[in-house]
Length: 268
Image (tube, rainbow, N blue to C red; front, side, top):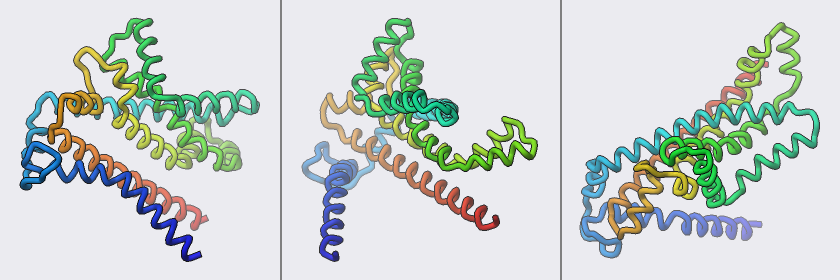
């Protein structure tokens, strides 16, 4: 038993080493005063200064965060509505069909989704740029929110809603004062997942961006193709650190919600 546990721990260490070693390699050379990723000459912050003095890059960063926040908020609202609609369908066949269609969008290759959106926007006459990127990010984020919210709806006892209705609560009160507080952890999880996917997406965005509009993932790819520049390392390091902050923030929000739920159950 002890040998198995040691072997599993060793396996986990190996997996994390493979996953994180390239990231830390990139992070380490973002402080290199030399222009390559082979010989570390001396410590410098010049590459970070270059990132913060690049006006075009700062505009792209702003575009990326605006797209991510807008798409996350809108997809969270739509995802909650979709999860509620799926949950309250009584017939199994339509419910399973909708769930299957929702899951297909999650597992579909990004290249197929991006090409499909490109064809769609070309046919209906939407110019490639901010609008096309926003609509695409909303579309692939909604199924993620649905998947996050549905389990919380399924956990909720129907007696809570029945009790609220018996006490004279309207449909809006039931939604805002009973259902939403209960599924709040799933809503936060869906929002943060949608935000992460939007910030991270490259394949779909690459197909639907245009008219001088770009996001960080596309910009990093374009710069990497032009040759090695340690400003890419600095930019990637900043994105990685921001992602860590998001994960830590989600963890603390989730912990607070869990404590609030436990306190509420203890009072009952």
